[in-house]
Image (tube, rainbow, N blue to C red; front, side, top):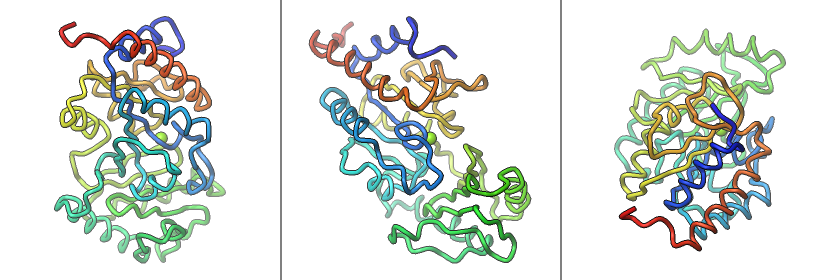
Length: 279
Ligand SMILES: [Mg+2]
């Protein structure tokens, strides 16, 4: 991994910008800093402005693990071209048979975890303490995202102990979920092939985007970085020696600078007439 703010990083950014790339952005920990209550992570005003300006030049996608309707609320009126939720599963068509199938799986897990089904629309209803008979851990929240589940243990008094209890409970679930860790979260996925990586590749193919720049910070974003796709410029928010991203930002607060640099590159590329397709 190399720093994004380096000669190589900026050279790569310029190369991508000349080809009018899709900007694909993770939400939590990337566009916003992580908060102890995930409901409170509205997009900061300066980032709102930068995203709006980006869209003058390029298409923008938000690719998040969040429940899609909630993501729309958090974006606070900032329009984007594509909003894909649930780690690549939810493109906004609830009638899709695959989504209906996985919703059934997730409801089964919720029952097994002894959490009563949650109203899907009430904004205050998306999460609650995991306090079923099997486990009672203050500070652990089950987030029902309809097609996936996320267990948050950031607010547990002893996060390591909370994780141990969660890990002990999960192998009992039927059918077995795919499990992926993250920053004080455990994500439960249906056994689908879909992840952020496959979703981004599909979006590029469907929309004929030749290039994409992707910013992400967490384990599920590695599904994009791991592709090491020649047309995708991967930037991780936060250094991680194990990451497959080509570049990294030191911290989330550097995102506004990264977007501002990107805008400057796009302005120049636009003024120069973008790169000729025949190249
Ligand atoms: Mg994230």
